[in-house]
Image 1 (cartoon, rainbow, N blue to C red):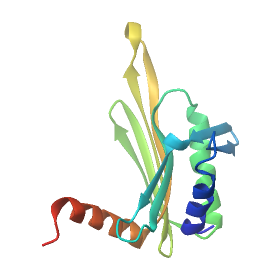
Image 2 (image 1 turned 180 degrees about the vertical axis):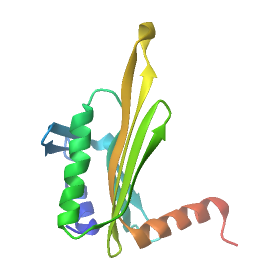
Image 3 (image 1 turned 180 degrees about the horizontal axis):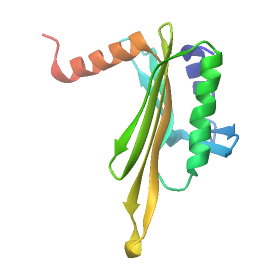
Length: 156
């Protein structure tokens, strides 16, 4: 499914009450609602530059389900011909992160997963997760970035 087709798929369902998407993984289901989607549109043409699905500060979803979702989505993209540009990991504040980038022509697929330890009430600690997958067009994403800067800074 192309980026434009994926955008049309979600646009057709966007106004449905209870809009959401559930992904079945080997480690359990992962559900997303409207607030977990980001659509970046070019200001000049309204073409979609990228679509991001994910969460920030999630302390309720299991790490295993998140990792399975990212791993299985990546495997599917690689079966579709996407090749790895990079996969890197490192330390994050009180935790770790992993991000990957895959390309097929102008299309890209990006993954991100970070977890960190946060202090809660009564001196207890828990883990919070930031994670997403992003599907986009390299050329449109760059144009999106440039147009947004241009709109904020002027073009003379």
